[in-house]
Amino acid sequence: MIDRKLLSSDSDYRRRIEAKRVAPELLDEFIKTDEQRSELLVIVEEKRAVKNKFSKEISKASPDEREIKLAQAGELKVELEKLETQLSEIEARFRELILQIPNPIHETVPEGDEDAYEIIKTVGEPYGPPKMDHADYGEHMGWVLSEQGAQISGSRFAYLAGDAVRLEFALVQWTLSLLAQHGFMPIVPPVLVRESTMEEAGFFPTDRNQVYELEQDNLFLVGTSEVPLSGLHRGQNIEARTFPIKYCGFSSCFRREAGTYGKDTRGIFRVHQFDKVEMFVYADPKNSWEIFEQILAIEEEICQALGFSYRVISCASGDLGPAAAKKYDVEVWLPSEGTYRELTSCSNYLDFASRRGNIRIKDENGSEFVHTLNGTAIAIGRGITFLMEKAQQDDGSFAIPEVLQPFMGGEKFLYSKNPERTYEK
RNA sequence: GGAGGGGUGGCAGAGCGGCCGAAUGCGCUAGUCUUGAAAACUAGAGAGUUAAUAGCUCCGGGGGUUCAAAUCCCUCCCCCUCCGCCA
Image 1: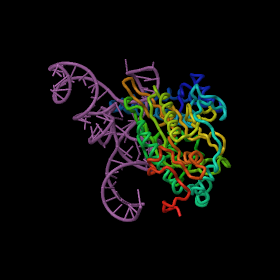
Image 2: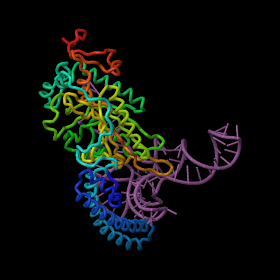
Image 3: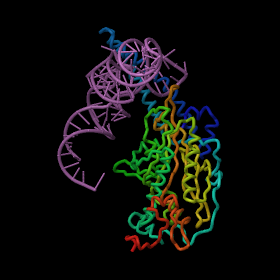
Image 4: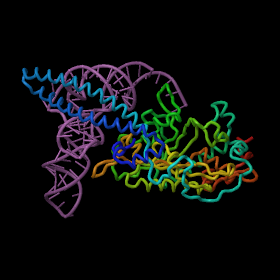
């Protein structure tokens, strides 16, 4: 949720909202509604003060005074009720509008459409394609069963099988241990959440069409554990000394992928369901930009340890979600496509979500809204996709990245058929 | 799924139409005492909004009755106990 006062008083604030391709009419209507609301609120509060005074007096009045005052209070009540009805109508509209207004971009965000991104850095070199692309390789190894997935659930669903599953858990274990060193507490959150949770996390109403809904129970499947992690401290006013509060959530993630028809249809690069370890930080507003860079550094650390060639881009204003003030994508070189593709990303929401969830930080001088940040540690489907091209050997075997070997029973290579493995016949 | 009980300040817990933004205890802050701490004693403090120590709002959320609601009614959510079912 934006700061309503800044919108009308600070022209730069407004400009940075409009950079997200917001209709100016929305902002104008909101400002108008906000003004009406403030004016009416003053009137209503004055009336309430009079009414409250009357009520107090009635309790102390003598019997005949009482009669008169009761009659007067009755009139006042009728008057006030009319005004309060008006006020609640305006407030409903106010709320509807403010929920549609995105967080302004940070001044350093490049403005423009999706391809106006800025390359922050490039690490490692691009290299030529392997024998098999990730989709063929997944089939070759017996790791990805797309056809069966499509049969039982539809397109963009797949079974993950065999050593790929061991690889998934190795990735998770390794990532969790690395994040523990960085002070992140692991969490397995609920993946079904209420509508209010989606709204407070900054996803509703704007991204509603990307989310699976369980109508019968009025619950929604999360697209990232960011959502339940963002709700973990809702309504709390937390001591400043406990910051930053760092969590890493492991969960399955569900995305409708609406509007991506025909895009990335091979393999498990883009699927409706995948597992992910997500970093989430509640930060003191004083240093949230530092923490933003720390989260990026961890994402890079993970990429480097897995041997990826990658680049970091600062996403353009038109590519930012409603809640993010700034977002970095870490894009890894995908040789079969000869291009960099997104593996992880991180965002600083500033106080956008904490305003909705009413999460504050307090010290001797009072309290303010906290900042929330999130970043992908490892998205399994994507991670394995990139690894299948990076670690694929000429003979078709798979060279397990060194950091994962301890979590794979010390093995160094994986094969499509391994006679020592009784499930591979 | 069925039956009952309950949600009040950081925590525990009283209040059950007006004197209640709320007793009391613990915890917290400051002071006295002490070399220091503890104990004891004294004083102080709920949150939000606002320029404001004014006003308004907040006793799980929403709605209603009333001049007046923490207190009565409806509804939703959550927690606990018992029965049933279950990984």
